[in-house]
Image 1 (cartoon, helix red, strand yellow):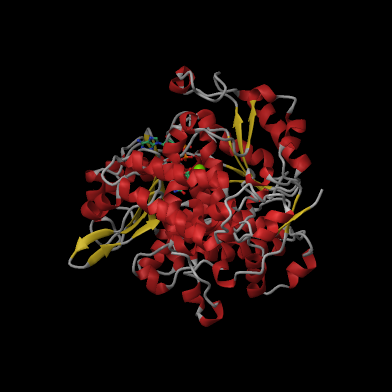
Image 2 (image 1 turned 45 degrees about the vertical axis):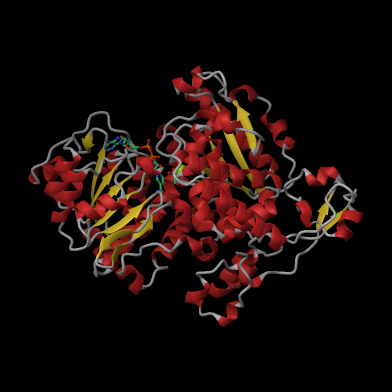
Amino acid sequence: MWRRSVSRSALTLRQSRRLSICASTTPIPAPSIIHKRGADILHDPWFNKDTGFPMTERDRLGLRGLLPPRVISFEQQYDRFMESYHSLEHNTKGQPLTVVSLAKWRILNRLHDRNETLYYRVLIDNIKDFAPIIYTPTVGLVCQNYSGLFRRPRGMYFSAKDKGEMMSMIYNWPAKQVDMIVLTDGSRILGLGDLGVQGMAIPIGKLDMYVAAAGINPQRILPIMLDVGTNNQQLLDNPLYIGLRQPRLEGEEYIAVVDELMEALHARWPKAIVQFEDFQFKWAFETLERYRKKICMFNDDIQGTAGVALAGLLGTVRAQGRPLSDFANQKIVVVGAGSAGLGVLNMAYQAVARMTGTNAKPQFFLLDKDGLITTERVGIDSAAAPFSKPIEEVKSLGLHEGSDLLEVVTKVKPHVLLGLSGVGGVFNEHVLKAMRNSDSPKPAIFAMSNPTLNAECTAADAFKHAGENIVFGSGSPFEHVDLGNGKVGHVNQANNMYLFPGIGLGSLLSGAHIISDGMLQAASECLASYMTEEEIQMGRLYPSIDSIRHITAEVGAAVVRAAVAEELAEGHGEVGPKELEHMSKEETVEYVTSNMWFPIYSPLVHEK
Ligand SMILES: NC(=O)c1ccc[n+]([C@@H]2O[C@H](COP(=O)([O-])OP(=O)(O)OC[C@H]3O[C@@H](n4cnc5c(N)ncnc54)[C@H](O)[C@@H]3O)[C@@H](O)[C@H]2O)c1
Ligand SMILES: O=C(O)C[C@H](O)C(=O)O
Ligand SMILES: [Mg+2]
């Protein structure tokens, strides 16, 4: 049902954060200037209100006669959509999950294509139900089938064939202002591998989360696919594949194309934040290092994930009833030494150095597809090398270079097992049972790979095999687990969605020209301290997705304040750096919150 306004002042902060922030403070809509009239407006999802155009507006904009006579209110439209959605749910009961999920995605996508205001309103109010459709896991299925599902373009497509043209192509985008860009080359889509141009559903889904969680105005978002070819033979063989049918560009050729695109983006929208998403390992770190000192960008898989994982690791220490300084003594087995796994290790090392003020190293054991990574590893990647275990230490534990996961868990008895491998089921029954001998009375298991089938284990298996006293987190959502006798195994969604919207929004509103490590740390620390002691003791390490706007406002404010502290903040719009500097913590949260867009129909005013 339509969510009515609730006076926020009547609620405690703890209560109000469970609600959609802006729903409680619905502002009076300011008019939007529109340069079109008549049927062109009905076909523009940014402005279209369907049957919701009031008569005065129909007269003003040349819409009279183009719509049925009755005016249907926004609330009625909302309820009607939700009714259709629920009947679809009812009518598809018993059908295979993929069929049901795609049907749900289609009905939402159709609304997205037609009426963005209504789309974002239903998304925000029903984020718990709809995030699994527009985001992981269904977005993975959508990417796998994107050539067949494609109906209307959204965002921009640049390809290897556009070399030399990008600087002018960028002006084909109709919006003058762009605040947030999510860019992929489709080379490592979730744990599904190279999906070429079909990976476009990922930037679209991430930007939907930006609108829902961070209140970025959807007229100022831009999903971008950089299609440099694909090495996925199945796609190359598919006559209906909608991307370039050529192998991926490599080496200098690849970098030259990315450079050109970055220059074009920066030239037209120098203040836009660029989020790199789902780039394969070999380019993820390289592009991050190449651009992070020049433009306001970050790599979500490396940096967003690291912050979320670190918050979960610190939450685990609290859940074990230990002081945070004990983090350095936690034995943590990380499975997956790619962009995400190494991002986590980098950030955790920095955190331990900060906490202890020494060179103390945290107790990480890193594995990749060839097992435990030690100083004896031949041909190790330079990004992984600092995290290889000294071979003497490994031998003293009865392990060796390349020891397999079961051996490592059995001998190390880790406090935490964290998966970012992309390999479904790699935390098998034996591995999970071995976690029963953990040195911690409350061990944590994070199966962070996406989508659901690629998770290292299911929530049910984790509680069944590793025991009821574990703390559990997964990248894709799972139902909480019924442990019998009224007990419930709580499932946390350990996903970078808790950070990237706040990182992007905070960077934007600070006006920083780069995103520093300090800003990212502040985001992670904010998330880590968000949960109360009571919640942590119940195994709740992250907030519910229902409060994602609230947590994003807090994270955004933490990022703004860190940018101010590092003298990176140059201000945004009419708010200058000095004003940012003088804001208290609460005022910064208010500043961030008041800049969040909220979907309501605004009066349209025509201008030639
Ligand atoms: N939950 C989140 O917020 C989040 C964020 C980022 C990435 N992820 C997920 O993490 C996964 C990995 O992402 P990435 O960018 O690091 O990928 P990547 O390709 O860069 O790295 C994958 C790593 O896993 C290792 N690996 C492969 N098979 C293995 C096995 N059997 N045992 C141990 N290690 C194995 C590889 O050697 C490699 O080091 C993906 O499924 C992605 O969806 C989740
Ligand atoms: O997209 C997600 O759900 C998280 C993460 O960015 C991933 O690549 O898996
Ligand atoms: Mg990703």
